[in-house]
Length: 342
Image 1 (tube, one colour):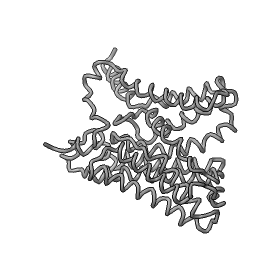
Image 2 (cartoon, one colour):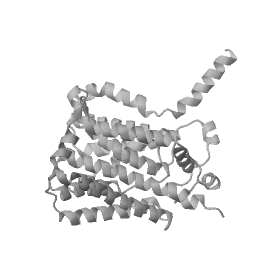
Image 3 (cartoon, rainbow, N blue to C red):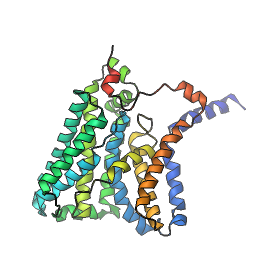
Image 4 (cartoon, helix red, strand yellow):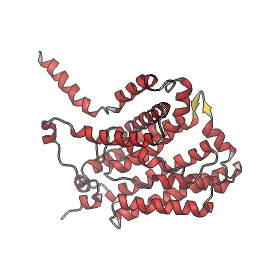
């Protein structure tokens, strides 16, 4: 074999580990879906599935940037629920109030993200504890503004947008694609995105390089809260009359989508695109499971099994790669403790 051929093979072998396995697996799932559940890959089924996949993708992008910094955001259900409740309760079905209602929903969720950021950066709480506490606050505020009963409908213009389509493509899917494209560009093509990646890979080196660790970590939680708020607002329009459990399903699902994208806690990978692919895979998988006429509880069992397998696969590597890899920091250790110097 010539030297040029060996060099070509070597270069391709270096590129392959950076390709998330979710892409070929997702294609395989869509190919076998009709065999597992008749009609699960028909045009009508795909059209009904796409909005749910898009909503999950938007929320999962927020979860992914937190997990990229070796954290875990447990405030997803409360934030999604609060955003949906603020829009419906403030607007009361009146389209003229929609703009202000959306601003209030974003404000409430982003304010929660700021509180989480302060708890992590100043009080040095772990993201797990800070986000869990804020999730309770979100739910409490949602209960307060609704009186424990959600009966208001979303404005007709919001529902028309969420349920409508443009050029045959769901409007929710268009929002998701735009958000994913912008997020992918910011993370992969900008200086701030590269610094964000360096902070995730080597916090100590980031501090030495002069990167403002507290600032980047704070923006992580604020941006994640914005993603959850977007999901809640669109979900309110899609469901028209959302209830207080509207965000419950998004905790495990977002974690599963991120892990399926090939990025476990602190892992590598194309941050945004792989997470979106994981959301699409998970939504289609759930549709196939439900199409087999099994009980809804099976859906959660499948999600848990998928997370376990996805977390296990990256550990099944060659010993040589394991020897080259540096031991990762503990995902439960606050990043500020990992970047502090003695």
